[in-house]
Image (cartoon, rainbow, N blue to C red; front, side, top):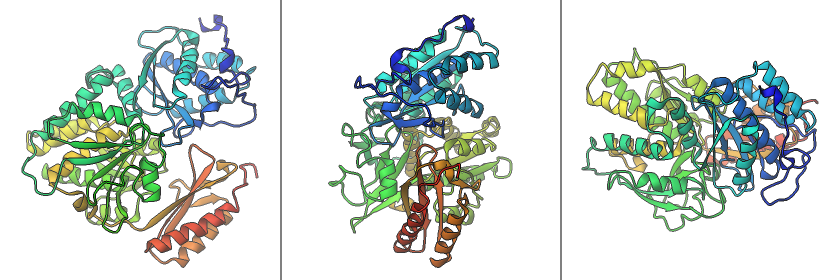
Length: 548
């Protein structure tokens, strides 16, 4: 029984003894609040050893209560290299159940003295789940950050406190670990492990590739790929080697430098500039960009004027939506198959108009964060969700597959294959890239033809560091502030001065003490001015706290 096992924490994984990967003592004082957010916990790596121990324990408890494999992914995605983070992956490959997010927050905020009591209370609350139950295992993966190995050791120590099996999968992309966990719990889905991931995606890609025309006028397989100096570099190379000859000609860039430094999807999306290392790329050639853990994907190409044309998550979503809508229509399933495109407040206004006016799809707007998008998407037979930052996927119901089984047409075949190729579990830059390339090949489109689907409304984003992000409370769709209400008044006034095509909002980050300003207007100059004006107004509220 768990209550007979002493809760003895290795000194280096306590708050008082917290020690980083450079063997430096970094004690963590009680009183600094931690919150399990949309991306789990994400902090400077120095703060994480004690957190990883506690999350390792919680993951093992989750595994024991479910009798299934649970994932622990150590990554800070697009954050700077000195940061790191951790999130738990549930048995279906999805984010941690909301109730358990509360457990995570409570455990991490406990003092060293309170932690053993908190563990005992949680064990009792959950009816003392059995030790070493069949199928219970914690599967851990990490990105390329230097702190990752020590944090894996901390997670292992926490997970094995109550004798739960722990498996270190080493360096993997975040989506790969989601896939690995899902397959461990659903063996019929596909081949297991990292190698199984490559086989599954390469063979599925080949199925559709072999059926597509090789006589192309506008599409070219040449692609420049910014790997953000992250884990996606080595993993995409492995996947590319398994693809059919001539399918893709990838020119890999930013593979081994400083993680996310002047490169990666977040930098390109926010700055609207080509990443470092792309100075010699010719104009009009298709470029793709991963983030640090390869769960985000955006595209761009250089223009003659030295600027770039960005094809972000909105453009990816609309390309996929066009493909699916046309195929469902040709099968006569428009009325029978519920189909949706889910967006957030960051979706470009012109993308929303294109969905409504050109594709006849009314988009659903939900709060920022994959868990909100995924939850809404799961309500439909088939739903596409992408955040503008490039994180997204397509979800499917069992009924979707049943409807497709009625037909042996090419349209049904293409949808069946695409539904296996796209990682339905979570946003996956590598799988999404393969899907985008096949759809472009299907339409025989150049990147310029894809970009011409609609012209982005000019926009600007600005980040502002604040004392307490919890002081900024928004409406459900995050397009208005509830608190501070006086700041929303200033935002409304600023937007009104920029004309009818202007819109703007301020929302807190789900992972850091920052707020983000987003502004759109009729011209880039107006968008820049609107964002700057709202940023100045927001800066006056940066010292607010949630108790004031």
